[in-house]
Image (cartoon, rainbow over all chains, first blue to last red):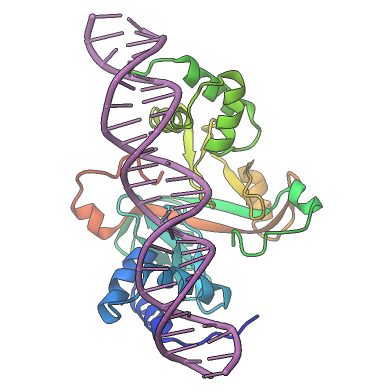
Length: 138
Length: 138
DNA sequence: CTCCGTGCAAACGATTTGCACTATG
DNA sequence: CATAGTGCAAATCGTTTGCACGGAG
């Protein structure tokens, strides 16, 4: 494990991520960071989000939609996904226990439903426990 | 809503999808269909999966991983995702109630955890209830 | 000074689309 | 026959990577 340097870019990316009250995708975060560091590259944003999540400073979110999203809040909580604009917000665990029973409002969202996804290792991958698999799905 | 023709391609795609006991991604399904229809195009597979899910014949699965996956089984059930090879299987609801408490085996899978995702409409999208939003996240 | 990190452009994987042709109903 | 569906290639979208240069420690 190599040591991380705190570059100006990394600092601003983290700062902007923490500033947002929902979970922007990389390109949206890039647009905001660019206002403070106009010469920054989108690749730098991607690289830093990845590095910071590997370091445990932020967390990668598994969520619907094709874009990657990250969370600076490391505590346990669930997320809510807007099926129209693809925005992703937090939803706390207590609230979700209530809302899981029947659709209702939460943080202004009109909840349509919820899904549960399990993850782990399939039979085949348990056997050939080699290569990949460390930084994949979770 | 326009009417669907039952082309040979569509028929075989559906047949191969139903035949599999897990949830192959488009490229994998394409490889199998190609054995029966060697001249079929990958684009046709994508188009048909999309059309059939819009028609309600099959269902689009929201799951981790970058590839789209579809389900011919329309009943309520959850899914399990292999973080190593990205295979996706079914997991039935009763079993998942048990397995949600502590990691254990299911269908040979070694379960590492589960996540819950809510979906619906964000405040902003509820206001401007126009365009898109029909065929998106669910 | 040493390398980790950067910007740029090109590469990439998954999916979508424009177009002229085919074939279903 | 009308027009939904096809195959192909090119386009698109989100993300990653190779490389030469720049700056943090």
